[in-house]
Length: 167
Picture (cartoon, rainbow, N blue to C red):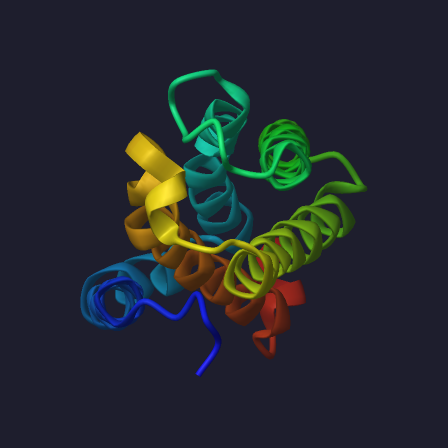
């Protein structure tokens, strides 16, 4: 096991991921798949508009002073870009711009890769999840919710016949 392996934290993240997936499968997916595609995508993108919360990793006192500033910056700016892409996607979907669906693809791919990269870097480079300080709930609760919603967006984007539903 890596020296920074923290079983309670890993179990917490795994529990949040499992619970998020179950709640999404039972309650969210049945609702969004019944909605018009562009409206469902807009609703799911709205959840990601709050990704600016990752900027708090760069706020003194929110995380430990020992947390790598490079990691904090990568998380913060990556999340801000994801939030901006989500908001832009929401606008494009609302106004039915021709670039709406490609915008959602860009937002969803960026957002997913950003979260997976943050988990990877956090797991391989951060000595202790305790360095996240008050921000511990972001990777332990919020990120699993975000990852599951990214999966839902991919499911809508890849859904057969969704092009006809979009028009």
